[in-house]
Amino acid sequence: MAEQVNRFLGDSPGRTIVKLIVVSLIVGFVMTVFDVRPWDVFHGIRDFVLDLWHRGFKALGAVGDYLLVGATIVIPAFVILRILSYRR
Image (cartoon, rainbow, N blue to C red):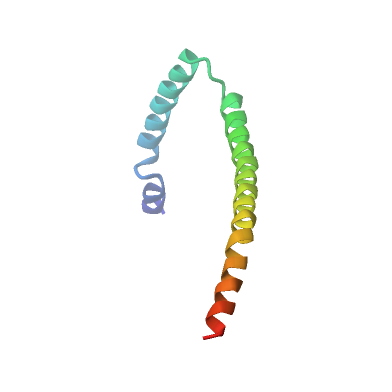
């Protein structure tokens, strides 16, 4: 059982706790220096996802516009070429 816990944690529980404490202190210090709070991070991630979502659909709308504009030239040209090649 202890071997499974060590394998899951990547090290012994005591060493893992010490590593987590050290990393938490460093990250907390850096976040304090840059005046970043945990909620700022969560809101930033949420805003990023929502912005990406809206821009993604906007990009798909632009692709649809390009498709329609291109089809107004390509489809009639295709039909004309097919009709001309059908006569031969």
